[in-house]
Length: 135
Image (cartoon, rainbow, N blue to C red; front, side):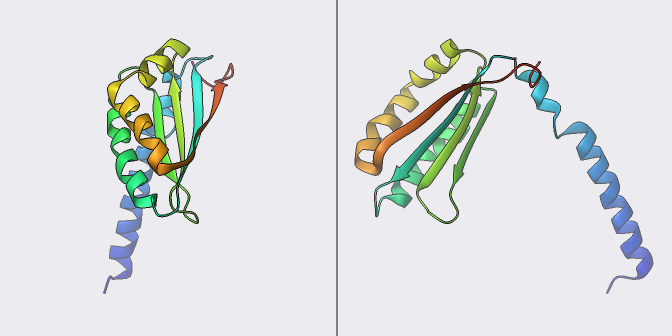
């Protein structure tokens, strides 16, 4: 069991760590996003019974896309209440950078697998980062 003093010291250390993370982490990357950057929100839903297979072919995209030097942000999310329902959030500096991303062989291979795995393909919203939110 922890003594009151040990608990207090632990909380102080944790608080210090939180302050360091707040100074070094959250919000720091926003400066890398230029005004007018291309923001993509995409949605794909697995066919019934294909949820795990779609997840398996989609998860490798995270590391591959984040490795693209032109990619600024990439998140893959899955609906907790509806397995197999994925939302992608991506930011690229320009439309040309996004188009180059879509032309990558690993992206093309993923798109080629969708007819067998996804219900209705991919729904894409192309958006723009508004002034004042980036650099």
